Length: 375
Image (tube, rainbow, N blue to C red):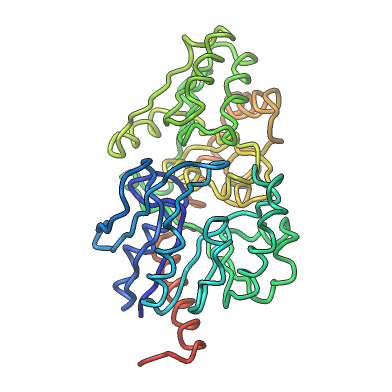
């Protein structure tokens, strides 16, 4: 069985969607499934070409420009039309307007993974323009996979298609600490080290995390990541006189990330809208026993780290509430240690094996239902 994954970007571009699609493609061969990928090149104006990533064939289409963060190319339609007839199933990772508006060319059985409702993201103003195309995609899909259960609750777009929806959470496959899962982290002092890991985009809300430090004398922040907001965030830290307490790390290789998690006390994901669809980095932090502070978004973010269980969930865009949540964890060792223990346990729920087995079953069922099943 051949599966064509259509996704905005793919590894070595880094992000939550890129990570789980790579996990799917790397894991499917053991189930007798042959994956391939159609994607845009995250580096502008590199020519369209085939390559292999972890033995997965990847067709990267040149990106000529960007429109509201979406890559634009004159050849993407042609690549879709050429590749779809050669596959058995199409797996579209949504939202991806460039692919959704080309829905009439998807002539094979279709699986959709629904990461976020565009009506709840930075795309909300443009959503009416491509909503008809997205509706046609949902009508044609044999199965719609949600990355978390709250997506259906917060998505009016999905309501007519509830009968097609299943939930398969994303998974974390990184290296774990050698400590036993029962080990509990302890605060190392009254002034904790706060950690953020992720792309520096506006929807990540790092601005509000920096502003929270104005209410937290002596607390230190380490920001691991790069992106278009880097210069703005650096300038804000200088403007507020916080630059001596904030460390920006733009080039941290994966093998150094464990040290960042081990040396931190609290992990914060301060995202401000549902463009933050899941926040798999929360699972990574929890696997190291870090309590997590996240935001109450209409996405899967609060489902990953649970309020008052593995940390604290606060309103978005609220630096005062964020500062209060940090103080609560740093001033209450009992609460901190409870969250640390629960975080390790919660991280075990998001296993790669579980995700792969469920997707393989979805693929097999869709293939069989299409009438093309071969034993």
